Image (cartoon, rainbow, N blue to C red; front, side):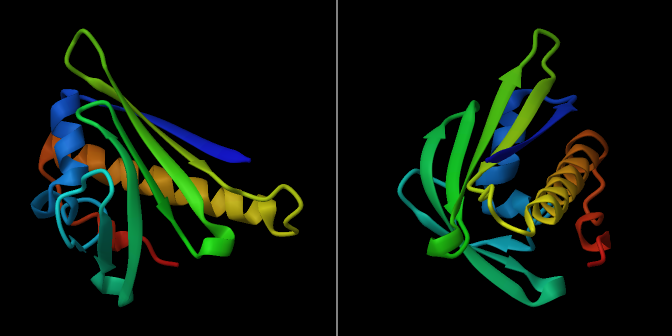
Length: 144
């Protein structure tokens, strides 16, 4: 089972793409830091200082300015995330995040899907604020 979230960002796809893959930019809207540039085949360590948390992703696919695919989570619950960028004629970009791997027989499925959707909507809101308006301190605002 998957969970899809879409947003329109008023910036070209290359700027949206670089916000994710460039370690100097990701801290402006999502994780506090990224260990290195995201490239296919790499394992990236992501840190979230405010929660004293750290995790790794495995980048399984990159199509520059168009798509990023990575796996995350424990092996028994691993999810695949596909971030697709579709640049429009006006140089804005539709970004779609599709997370797969939710188990339909999970008693907590609805809660997990809602929590997951909330997380992606928050991250994409922070991305939009960062790229369109230069706001780079929203990511620390979500309280769990």
